[in-house]
Amino acid sequence: MRVIVAEDQGMLRGALSALLDLEEDIEVVGQAANGEQALDMIQSLKPDLCIMDIEMPKLTGLDVAENIKQNNMACRVVILTTFSRSGYFQRAMKAGVHGYLLKDAPIQELSEALRKVEQGGRAISPELALQFWEAENPLTSKEQDILKLIAQGLSAGEMAKQLFLSSGTIRNYVSEILQKLEAKNRIDAIAIAEKNGWLS
Image (cartoon, rainbow, N blue to C red; front, side, top):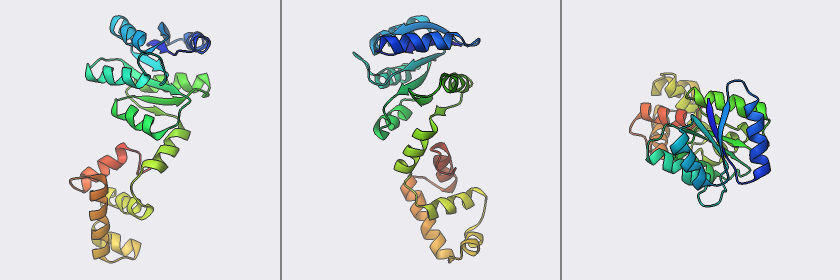
């Protein structure tokens, strides 16, 4: 896979590029010192992936990711950051970022993440995923339990028996779940929760 590394700290950029180049299936085709340079390289070199820091001069990594999405470019973006703020993470997800990893992760973890992303998957640092899941999941633990049972195909009556609640209470919970997730129906609610990792 052809990769661009965008990082404003020269030493880190060089070290990261050198380590990734040692992997048989990864070729670093460009190094960018700021977001504007990264965007130019993505347009001219057409890499498979771009590894980017968030905080960079001229354009941030998130600005570049949003630009890539708006212009339907094929390059997939992996954010490499020291920032674990949920606001950044939410913006990154909306921008279609495929990876969100911490800078102190081992190089082996990064190269495995790049392979996963290249194959169409997502790669998010477990520490970040847990933190954002806890911060952003709007469902209570009881609502999550009920949604899991809905996903298993149980009816309101069956859920009521299993959870020792009345059918009316189950229906109230389901209504609350749909409202919180802004879901049209139960199937939509399951899809939204699975997409955000709230059913794991």
